[in-house]
Image 1: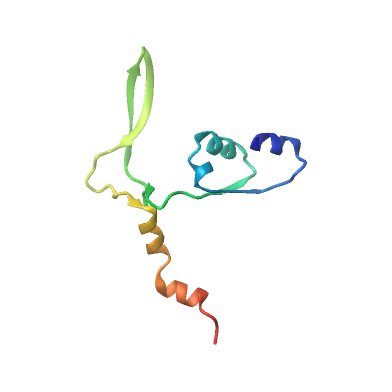
Image 2: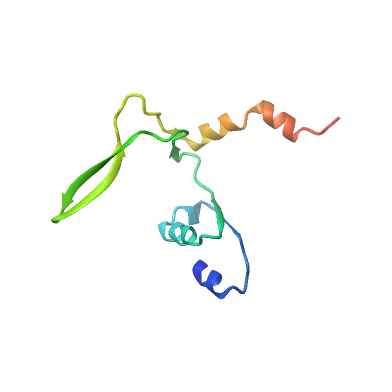
Length: 107
């Protein structure tokens, strides 16, 4: 549906915002990622795990059904960062002092 709207060019748009219902749909995420000229922002549940810094990965080659495939896996180094839930990351980014200066009425 999203790609059909973009192809018809009857409703011009440059941004897509979606709640967690759409964000949890792989089909929707793939469709919005395919729209190169569109910026998108998807809501994720606060218990979603993420890395603040990219972890160290290695590329592993293996055979499956006679085909050679590759995939990236965590390297297992002890220096790898530990994933944090989104609620923790947001709390670190938006400190109370920042909120007070940005939201508080000016006197």
